[in-house]
Amino acid sequence: MRRIADVGAAVIGTGFIGTVHVEALRRIGVQVRGVLGSTPERGRLRAEALGAPRAYASLDELLDDPSVQVVHVTSPNHLHVPQTERILASGRHVVCEKPLAMTAAESAALVAQATASGLVCAVNFNIRFYPIHQHVREMVAAGDLGDVRFVTGHYFQDWLLLETDWNWRLEPDKGGSLRAVGDIGSHWLDLVTFLTGQPIVSVMADLATFIPLRAEPRGPVETFSTERATDTVEREMATEDVASILLRFANGARGALAVSQISAGRKNSLQWEIDGSTSAAAWDSETPDHLWIGHRARANEILLRNPALMGAAGRTASSLPAGHVEGFGDTFGALFRAVYADVLADHPADRPPYATFADGHDEMLVGDAIAESARQGRWIDVDRTPAGTGTTHALEATR
Image (cartoon, rainbow, N blue to C red; front, side, top):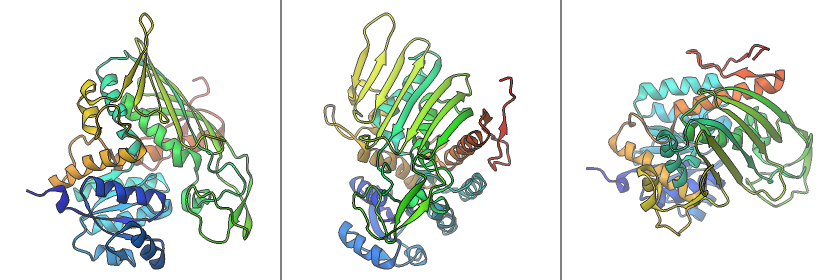
């Protein structure tokens, strides 16, 4: 019987998130065979810094390595599809960063390829794997909050607050047409869909760009870097800094989301509240081991993450005893444990707890509806027609 230590993985991308993947894989016992950087030289330097045994010079070289069974794609967004297509064609399992693709038509094609392959194909919506979130999903499904009525929250960061802040995500040809929504808003949207079990069926969105011109450095820039380049060129911005989005869910529940990458002092603030017909629940990423549970006729509660007091899913996602805070980095380990359980079985589970390519495609469809709503200034339905190309249509004016 194969063990997790028998599985070899490679990571494409050696920046912030690629490094997190490498470290999480090692923690759960997966053998990281090597990394592929944006250039052979960068890959070599990052491999040395990470202690990776090998720096692949190209994707061809990576796919020629028979010791690799799983490939993690953490490259810039525009590379996800071409790289993932080749990885699947080579017979490897894939863990791809979000967004899965640049367009819904591309993500639909990847879903078809993944389904035909029978391989394990996951999208890295890691926020699902805070133990509290695994527990809350079970609470909602069991009816502990009653009927879900109202879902609210935000995802705020400040790393693009200044006109001198720069990253490849600001470039639509690399990051996509939605920036704040696609980069961080997608995490919130996937999360509340996961927690409530309710898909988003229509949206009303307002997008705004407050920094129309930015100073692009002529050299490379690391994500979340605080260094300021002096050799820059002025670039016009075509993607949003902030978003305000109203939501309607399949069961009739309503929602409201605010997204910002220019909120001073907010480094990585994700908050949500789910108001049900009998109780409510709320969570804040800055205190990830705390779950607030609200009541009408008795005292409110604070559940501190404790495997002994949580459901089966929450216990499975926990790797530390109560009182030892589990944070952002730990979610990757919990997600990867679930993914690699299926890798060891050599096929995906019937209902995997991680986000599949189908989930990643659905998030693309929601994003298309958000972009179209912002363009038209009205409610837009999420189009889940079999064609899966992401074409959206306006709701009737009377709705």
